[in-house]
Each structure stands twice: as C-alpha cells, then as structure tokens.
Length: 360
Image (cartoon, rainbow, N blue to C red):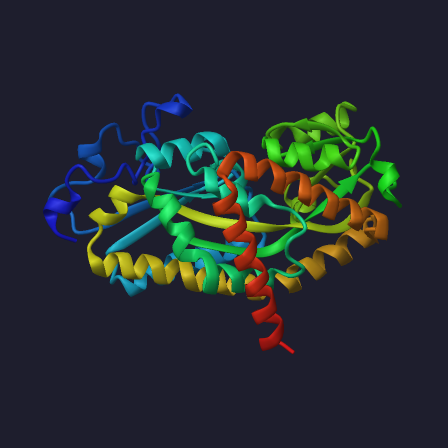
C-alpha cells in the first residue's frame, strides 16, 4: 500500500471506539494504542484490519474458518495484511456496529441485515420471511440476480458490501411445546429489534419482546421470555441448553451473514489489497456455506442427546409464516415504495425458477 494511502486511514489496529467508552483498545500484540498515529505509521507497509461482530464464534465453523482464512490472507499478502476479530459484542451492539462502520470508526463489521436498516433502508428486503426454501436458492439469487443492486444501496450509505450469503436458517426454540400455530398465542417470544420481525411474529399470535440477544438467556431464566428464534448453533454457543427444551424447525428466514466496510476506507486500500480482501471474503463465505450443513446435523444430534425435543413445523404453522410474509411485504411497500419491493420480489421468483431448472 502507498504511504499516502496509509496516513489518516483506518482505526484498525486497536480500535479507539467512543461508543464503547474506551480510550484505547488492544492491538494484535495485546498492547494498547491511544492515537491514530500510533495505529498506522506512515513508514509502515502493513495494513491492519479489525473485524467486529456481536456473535460468539468460539468452537463453531464460523470462527474456525475465520481464523483459518486470516492466516491465508496473511500468506497471500506476504505479511502485508494482518486481520484481527473482536467477538461477542466486544466493540458494541449490532446497532452500534452499523453506526460505527458508516461513520468510519470501525473498518469492517459482520452483521445480519436486520440491524442495518438504520443505515441502508433497503436491507429490510432481506428480512422478508417465507421467501426461500433453501440457502442455495438465496445464495443463487444474491450472486446472480441482486448483488449489484444491493451494492448500490450500501454504497449510497457510504458502506461497501463485501459479501452477503446465507449459511443456515433461523429456527424457533421454546420452553413450551409447540405443535400447531395456535400454540404461539401468548407465547413470550424474543425477536430482533426490528419492526418487520415484530409484525411478522405478532401476526402469528406471539407476544413479541424485542431485545438484544445478550439478554436472552437471563430473560428466559427469569420467566420474561418463553422462546426465541435463531440458528441452531446459538443453542450451543449461548448456552441455551437447559432453559429451552423444544426446537421447532421453522426455516422461516435464512440466516444471512454480511461483511461491511466503510467505503472510504475500502477505497483507500490499494487495488491489490482490495482484491485480496475480496478473495478472503468470497472463499471463506463459500466454505462456510459448504460446511454448515454437517455442523448443523451434529448440533441436532447433540441437542437430541441432551433431551431437547426436535420437531418439524406443522402445516398450519407454515401457512402462518406465509401469511406473516404478506404482512411484512405490505409494510415494505409503504416504507420503500412499490417499485423497489416489486422489483425485488420479481427477481426472487425468476432466480428460484432458474435455480430449480439448473438443479433438477
């Protein structure tokens, strides 16, 4: 990277983030830095990239692959790019992370689309439930029908969308048995802090309590919540075993992982480093999609061994998902306009038809 592109560039090695209340953060060697000048020196020929996420990726495929590809990126760049990740909300909540990457106080974050609508209103399109039957359908749609349009929306907000892919589905877990849609009535369900998710679950009869996921386990223990919805791996990584006895395989919404970077900071990278960063993102995401089904099967087996009761969603529950989908679509028509929503839905149907034809 050229020296003039380094100066005044990223707060990436030891992120000094006001929203965390910290004057300095630890760098890759564990030392503290207190200023941008100390973070990236003019004479330094190494780019340090920080990645922040609210998720806990310890002992799961996502974390293992990130560490593996961090080493590969270091090798590909001949030591020129060093990447460090901050897990488990260490640098802020999801809502704080999206604000920070837009402002440029964080360079790269990993988030689900739900928490991005404050910066990119069109990200809400990705939150429509009941549209996709498989992660393959979703990824085919994004890769072949919608990534360019999505990228434009993000760049208008000053953000580079590095990758967008689904590696699993969100499922419902509960401490009460759910055999039909009627069992949702009055169920105290945690959702993400999204008006669309709230409306979706309310349309099916649940009593919705939006909150940060870090508060969920305690809320269940205290009787504030009965249920939550997330990928199966969260039962393990957030220690929900023992407080949630039932898993209902609803597949209501793909678990979408996006990596976002501040656009100015992305453009400040040399062309070679941008290509290496994109290679890192693409190959890591592709391998995650390939490996996740085996991990989920292992998780299902572990949950069953621990006495968790696992069932498929009933037919009337699936009908409720489709009815809830229409509620969300109607809201999006009002919020985003008919043209944007209709275009999105048309391309989804075209992509699904093409994907089915190619995979017969």
